[in-house]
Image 1 (cartoon, rainbow, N blue to C red):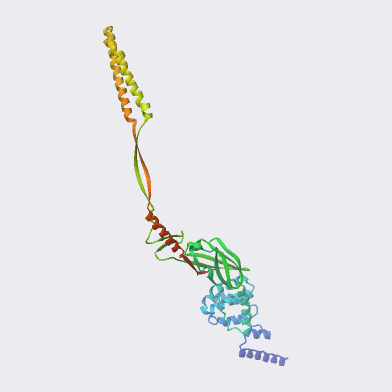
Image 2 (tube, rainbow, N blue to C red):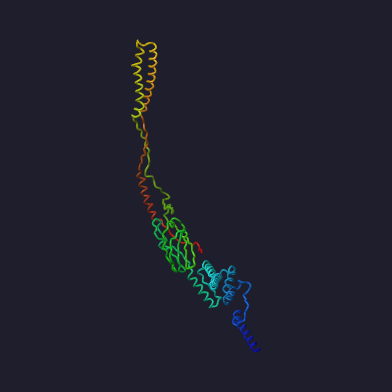
Length: 392
């Protein structure tokens, strides 16, 4: 029995020595010999040899949750060139641990900050590196995204006054995905993107030619992953020198010439004299009639009676009073009638506007319109895309 124990001790020591010589972790050796080893995690300065810590965790079965927690803890202190590898390892560890929320979180972070950078991971052995690469490539191949957005060839330059019905947008996609293109709350396009270059036909919005910048939001979705990319469609307006142009209204004019008035207005004053028969019959004739009648009454009735031999002094006094009263009334109505006769002769003053055409101004304006129309034919817009950032 003692010999058997000595033999086993020699075997264990030999295994430990061999493991140290080839760089095998103590945990692996203990596992192979059946001896329970303690968790000898490398060193207190966690970022000094983070690669060694990763190798250590990967060689231990089922330690992905610990690996994820460790990498998340050291991520802020990791040098910038190493962060792409750390983010991909975080994604890998989350997926292997079954934590899909964390997997997507770190994959989103990597895609937002380092998409397009090839991971190195040269410190891993070939077997582990292949496993990580294959896993990451499967995730990246399904992750929607846009490499570039450009204005299509047919839409890069258009005539302002004769814009086409369709505006073309070239989108280079990383992976197949559903896509929507919106301006504000209006959806301009909804469809599907293939991997690679795609040409999206959008309706030509009036705002595209009225504003120098329009923000387009490109939404992408592949299964549960949704991302969006904002770009700015910029417009540059071209028109001849010496011309004013307002893209909002489309109004054009020359800076040094203006249209002339083709007509001038003249006001003519006309006077018309006439006899107002109605006024004469209503006002003058009755007054004159009363005045004449009173005079006749006085001359034919009262005056003879006053001068008659048969008149008594009393009757003569009464008749004399009536005669004077009649005379006064007759004179009054006669004067009123005469005034009304004068007022029956009336005068009307009217003003008439006369338009006078200027043939020289009309010829000048005709030539100016022709030149302005020729200048309008040269008004155009060139479009380009300015990146505005990526949102999740």
